[in-house]
Length: 258
Image (cartoon, rainbow, N blue to C red; front, side, top):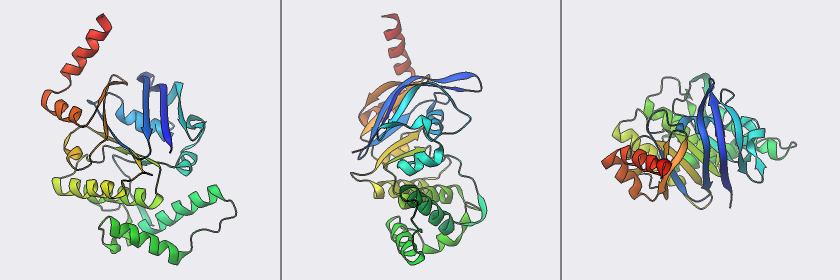
């Protein structure tokens, strides 16, 4: 079973230290929720894990499948089995969802075997239809240009379809619930739950407890000031919804002064 192990990770953005010695382990087969106020470092963590060039790692390591992925480019991290669902997916005019996904799949196959000729079109169509049926999506969706003219909910469902098709071992969902109405939120959450199983691990980054009503986490982490401040079960998210972050800040202050 694969694990993504983050150890003492420190990251600068624009000359400011955002992650300040963060430790976290995400396992296949478990869903982790990461919550925290604005500016705590949640999105910085997501982008750093997938290799965004604007995020400078100053120390620490991220281990996956026996290697420090901080030495790899984003494509290599994807080929290893990592996936990032963006908070703000961009549109790619002229590129259909189907063509985008087939290109991505073939890139993964070629990384494993340079002689691979790619997934034959009939097999790809069968795979894509199976995944769209799993996610209860209309097959016509695959013919649309990626995210062009999409609603917020459609963009997020397209991200979930990419995740289902690429079948990562560890997925990072960066505020996938952001900007969604309740129906779109439920659709996206049901898609995540449909993928759940022993070979799928996820880090669900969110501000709000509401998505966790549909995507049930095994573990909840609270992030403050660039570090994990508290870890617990699903009840931790409910406590946070009720009491806010002040009680965690007070607990951290007590540790510092003790």
